[in-house]
Image (cartoon, rainbow, N blue to C red; front, side):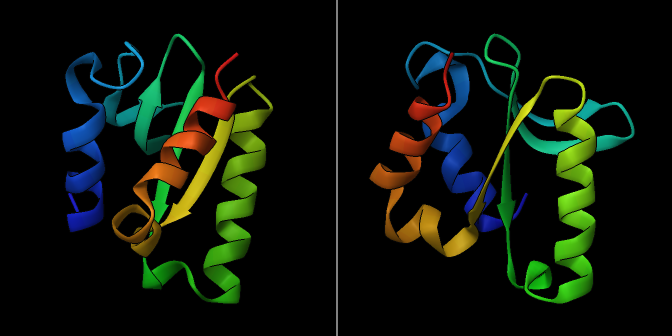
Length: 98
């Protein structure tokens, strides 16, 4: 795990966040997603610097569309946002609960 993934995981593991169960490094179709909540069909992806170029962003968009075609919701956060504004990350996650 990246430091940002470890930090977020510390706050959402073991049903600590809204009583929802999250899995990390979860396999869905052809991909391994950073975090997944089955109850909500919610995928959380954390993006570091490697995602800050056109090719990576295009691949991320293709991946998101593919996963969404199966009914999953995909939300993405930059790693720095997890450290700098965790409350906002939590609000966005909550806003994507069904």
